[in-house]
Length: 231
Image (cartoon, rainbow, N blue to C red; front, side, top):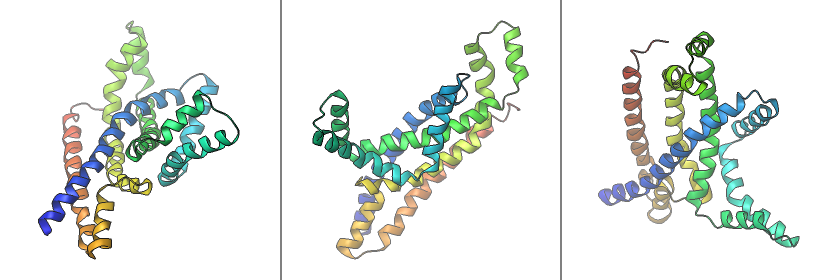
């Protein structure tokens, strides 16, 4: 019985890993783009991006999951009731039919991209202005300055706060069951409902602890590798 439970929980933990992996894949580059938008010299764009980040960071992730899951269906129903049927409505109709895991990935990616954007912004703005000016004097383009001067120093600065957010993401994935994503916590709850077993629910903590421990070791290794680079 114990082995069967462990194997079944591991299968559902793979769903958790999928959500974690795809969220990082999409949220990291999106967060960098959002950070550029918030630092834009074009004030209307900067203002809109900052308001968007404020709204996403200021509202619960669970609320955003529910909105992304039920929102498209409500919009489609309202449009159909009003006799509206265009490409915009068709897009939301397809989004409403999406797999709950896909919806969760979209919601998580947008949420974490906003948190990452603030970390990226702090890392970029933390690089002394004089170094960028020195790059301009040497005839480097803005792209060359970013990749050759700013980027490495930014990475060094953002590793600690980024590691904290990524480990938080591991635990936040459990919220996906709110929109019927059958992940490890939900699988453990089934054992309570069907077999009256409580221990599988607590045993899920072993998976989270093991994965968080591996990530902690990874980020410690990265920090040591970057320790030669003083900022």
